[in-house]
Image 1 (cartoon, rainbow, N blue to C red):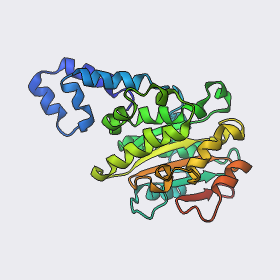
Image 2: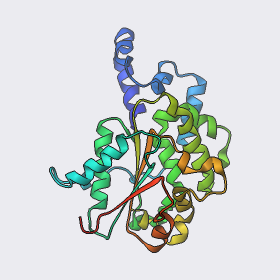
Image 3: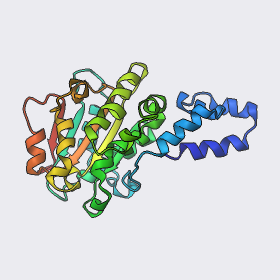
Length: 266
């Protein structure tokens, strides 16, 4: 997804006009900018490319489950993603002790939906990469991954707002870069998009993920930022160890927008 611009640029240069029009039919309307590189389209690319992005935090196919394993839990998560009913929880929290296979399942789901063209983003925390401060750049990275779906809406939100692109206030970025654009987009969608967030427990100390947990739990003061109102066409798959701060934030009976499952004992 994140290489679609360069791939498209190469193919256009090799195809004639009629062949290109034929090739273009059936592709997403988000690519229409490349038919005529106007100054507006160039400005969109500049805006998007200037947003902080964590390279190497995405899907790793070397981590996917072995063929024929973990079928039951993979099918359960897949069914949850594909169920776009308004009452379906928007978040699936898969938790368990270290070594129980959470990351393998997360990457397998990400790979499965990537092949379907339905992976919005895969963002992985890593205790060995804390210096990158991934917890401060999670939403700019996810937003850039989602740009193929929300390019026009996203650039409308960030154009001329340098502070939004570079702020450490992820609550503001969640609302303006993720929630509001996806709400506007959802009316014309026909299928689900999944965002995979793996190993939240490796983000750092509890302070590093406090605001992110507030967003996931829906404990925000701004009602317009509430995750319970997340588009039914989008799902967030989250994995982590059940650390005390994560469990306290997410393991509550009144959080109807969160479905959870423990890997311990499976």
